[in-house]
Image 1 (cartoon, one colour):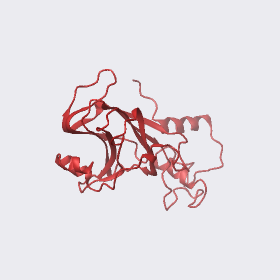
Image 2 (tube, rainbow, N blue to C red):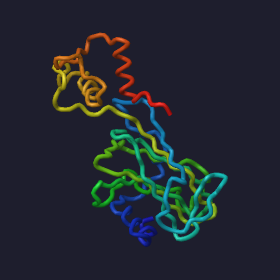
Image 3 (cartoon, rainbow, N blue to C red):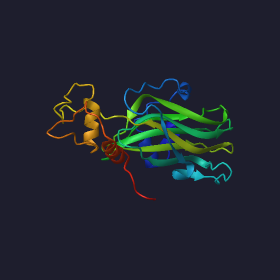
Image 4 (cartoon, one colour):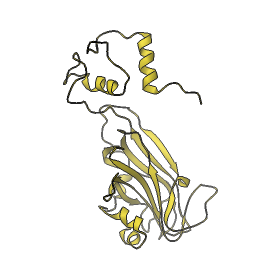
Length: 247
């Protein structure tokens, strides 16, 4: 894979910098997800269609109108799309839906990231593919992050990359990212005197305050044991969910 991309464009070479090898086929299972301590209990799936990607290298073959798939005609093709996830979201896994019925060609994919000020790239997921001479047919190829990554949009930009060898029986259709929302870490200081640093509620109360959902009950207090009225509940939910703008 490195050799093929190294012969291509400057953009392709940049994505190869820092590549630590091809991920093993064993990563295609979903049994090694790290436990989630705080945040949503279920994963959110965001899907990028093949048409969301830009061709950066190679000569593309005709679009498959039946599957919505893209394929490479010659030279090896590199497609790239920007990835936008909520700041602080925890990336758990990525997957590509692809068809590989070709004994020579293959489809591979990666998840690179780069600082906002250009200074090289790293990989959250290095290039993983459908396997050289293997012909697994049509499948959804999954890679779990051994250590889930917390999105930092203030410091990094994220991209999705798909590379395909030429092949009449090789194409891909969509790229999916699974993530979970999580609560931000607790700050070193306390906003409210009655929810001090080290208390069980500190992290969560500070997250509400930082998001503008609560200002406490006055006089520098949060009143954690006070009951919540229906009016206060309406304020909490409306602000937290950003309600309501008509479509």
